[in-house]
Amino acid sequence: MDSSLLIALAVVVVVLFFLVSMFNKLVTMRNRYQNAFSQIEVQLKRRYDLIPNLVNAAKAYMKHESETLEAVVKARNEAMSGLNKASGDQTGAGIAELAGAEKQLTAAMGRFNMVMESYPDLKANQNMMQLSEEMTSTENKIAFARQGYNDSVTGYNSYKQQFPAVVFAGMFGHSADAKLLEFEDSAALQKAPEVSF
Image (cartoon, rainbow, N blue to C red; front, side, top):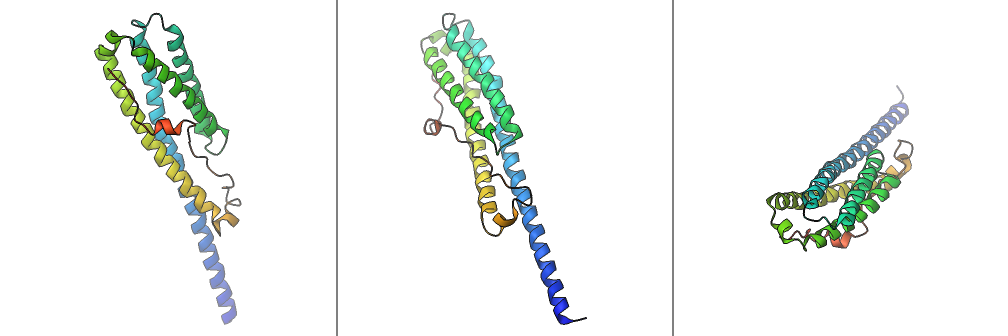
């Protein structure tokens, strides 16, 4: 066998190995950020499930605050819809819609907490205290999961934008960048949620 043919064959094998390795790394990194989003999804669903319980616990005490309670329920439902859209595609508008819906939910919950301050009996209610503690714990888990998701997205996007992956990523089905999950009120989210009794 001719030595130039062996060299050419070796180069082809090395290039194929390199391309397969790059493809596998892109798939692995995409799966990581999708899994990280699933962790956010679990925590957001937990929060969405807690909100109706909070509202129901507060209804008996806050009879004159039905507008506030309805706003919380409406914002929760919109956030759930945004989460459903974002679950299917972390590269499109679903992530932005989820971020906007979460902003509205955070604002509604803030108003709910402010109104709740006017009801000392509600703040002293054992069920309400337990629900508020669960909500605070869930908020912390959401922040942690969101950080993990954004780290995974940044790693994925950085890898696929670097040479030589940038040349082949589109051919391998990785043309769109994943979107970071950033809330417009991210400065407020850096503070721990305040639940006072």
